[in-house]
Length: 114
Image (cartoon, rainbow, N blue to C red; front, side, top):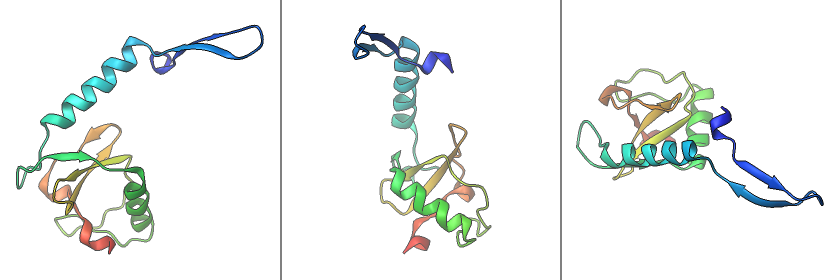
């Protein structure tokens, strides 16, 4: 993971003078944004966006309590690293180990969180 670490120049006083983010990090972030921009819901073809951390925490809490089912009505048992939310905010597609799971049956209906 060294390619994710920024280069930091520190003054003798201990203060950070300058922080340089590596090109590898910029490319990774750019690729992720490009990927999200071309992804869409496999069912409705609506665009998706990255879900905020608060929603992911709420979903992971429901998973811990055994209260969440996916679109196929199977219990969701594996916590999410992130998610892609459909533009109508009704379905969230899980992201696990930086891989979006864009399968209709794996989508999580968000009306369960109400």
